[in-house]
Image (cartoon, rainbow, N blue to C red; front, side, top):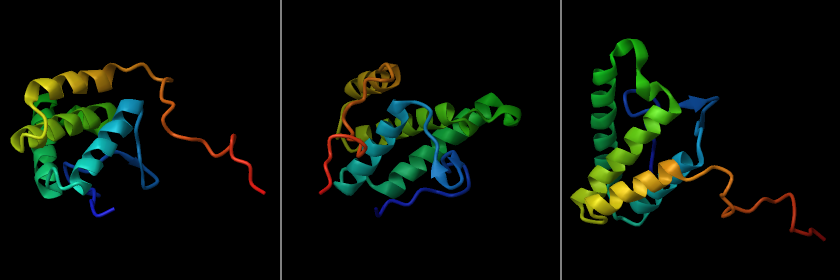
Amino acid sequence: MSQELASDGPAAPPRVNGELVFDAPWQSRAFGVAAALADAGRIGWPDFQAALIRRVEAVDAASGPAQRSTGTPDGYWRCWLEALGDVTVATSTIDAAAWAERADDFANRAPGHDHDHDHDDHGHHHH
């Protein structure tokens, strides 16, 4: 994938052993949406990273250095969604109201109902 995520600095996502950390299904969907839009040329990845840094810095400034709320996956991926909203609205890919609705949808969807990815442990017969 051509999109490089920051490995340090404000826009760096939470990682454990180099793997991205998601603690809810909407977070990995948010990541997938951003990557897909960038791949399709609908958003500029550098623009998105810049928007993400602005969002993260604003949240961190508001919460104080003692508790960087973006240091948690939940805090970080919320900024991610907002940054994605910023750049998609700026390029009129999605209008702001629709995006806000979709972001809520993402965040509120109950876990355990994601059946859109297939698991290799069943249903595939290897001969």
